[in-house]
Every structure is written in C-alpha cells, then in structure tokens.
Image 1 (cartoon, rainbow, N blue to C red):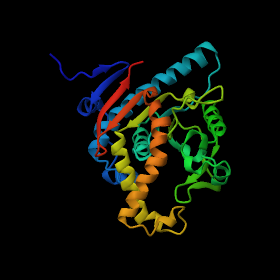
Image 2: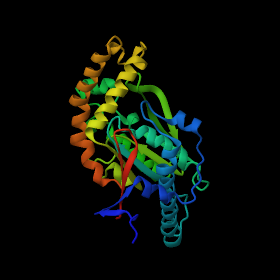
Image 3: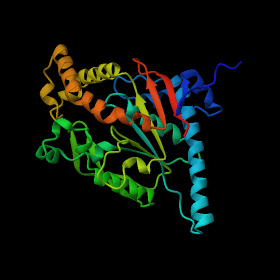
Length: 313
C-alpha cells in the first residue's frame, strides 16, 4: 500500500518536503552555489538542496500552468474572437509577513523560472514601489502604519496590473529605497512585456478595496510564505540586529539614529517595532489572506521548508 501520497486537507493537498521534491522529475538544476549566494537575503540560509527540493518542482508546476494559460488565451483570442495577439504576462503573486523570506524566495523563483526556454523573460516587481512617499505618509499620520494597506497607492498599483495584463509596454514604476525608507525621486523600474511577472508584497492578496477590482483579480497563481509568528519575530529581530551593525551606521540611512544601540538595546527596539507595527499588520491584514493563495509554503524555525499546501481548485 502506497504511503507517499499527499494528504488531503480540503481544499488543499498537503506535501512533505520529500514528497514535493519527488515532483521535480527531470527538471535540471541550472543555478550554481555562487548564484544562490548572490540572491540570498540577510540571515536567510538557502542551499543548493533547497533549490533542488523546493524551487525546481515549483518551477515545473508553474511551467505547466504558463503553457496551459497560453493555450486558453489562444483559444479565446484566435479561435473564438479571430484576433490573434501576444499572450499577456503570466502573473505570480508572492505574499507573507515582514521577515518571512518573501524577497529571497521571489528572487530565486525568478532565477529558476527564467532558465526555462519557453519563458526566459521573467520580471520581479515588489509592492514597495507603490508605497506613498514619506511626505504623504507623514501628512496623513501613517508613518507608523507603513506596510498596512492604507499606506499604498492602490489606484496606481491596480492601474499597473491592468496595463500589463492589457499588453501595454515600457511601464514605468517608482523605485523604493530601504536605506532612505522612501520612494527615490525621478528613478523608475521599466517593465516591458515579460513572459512572467512575479509580484511580491505584504498585502497582495488583500480583498478590501473601494475599487471595482482587487489586485488578486489579475493574478494567475499565488503563493503565501508561512511560518509560526514566534519564528518570524526571531528572524525580524536577527535582521534588525544585523542592519543596526551595518546599514544603519551609514548617515544616509533613515534609521541612522539607531547606530549607537548596544546589542540589548537593538534587541529591545526590534521587538518593540515588531509588536507595535509588524505583528498587528500580520494578524489583521496579512495572515487572513493566507488561504486565498494557490500554494502555501510552510517554513520551520531554521527557514527550511517543511510542508507545502497546494490548492486543488
């Protein structure tokens, strides 16, 4: 009797790491250790084994989805409407808490997906670029709620998603600086008809909106990176401590005023920010969107993926 089949937790199929890794099939490993080192984030260990076990099966699944989506587009546009047009970019959303590893995950996923010959152009956009500038947030009294839904220019975000799905080219997006903690004036990221767009951010799966549509209406596939709250708090604290010793020491850093904290002071400040800002945002706005994702990736306290939940319908 087989015991390696995924378990059903309606509406998800639940896979252990080894069960998921077996779905890699013959997908080749095309990233080197050096490339992985360049893509890895602060205090986020990622190994070549992680890429083989987690990212390669996922890239295979997404490749199948992209191929199927292109076929559907062809049926509707060419066979039914008789007006062939270029396929719209396939949009993958990546959601999850601050410090859970979304950015590293998105960068590695982009690298792996771009090695497939039938969709080599993969772009990554983070929702940080859609944050209101500091002067706007300050005027509205929202600086302590940065990362909450109301701190984003939702109208601009939805306009971008609509434009890229409509086939518009050379779309210019604001660039956010984590060092300056603000939008960089007169600098832009240009997105020009990629095969796949990875759209990464805290609240991308949010449904609360006064608009007729929400961001997730434009997504073809969505992923939520998950972990226990205590683990995420520990990762946030570790990252804050590391930044306090490095990036915060630069006069250009928005957090330069933390430069003289000792280790205990940095730990206390990180925990205070986490509990006053990031934890409430996670509990109120981010975590409630988890079950809207097509795939939930669960990490253990060491950042290793331990379980994956794939929505069946």
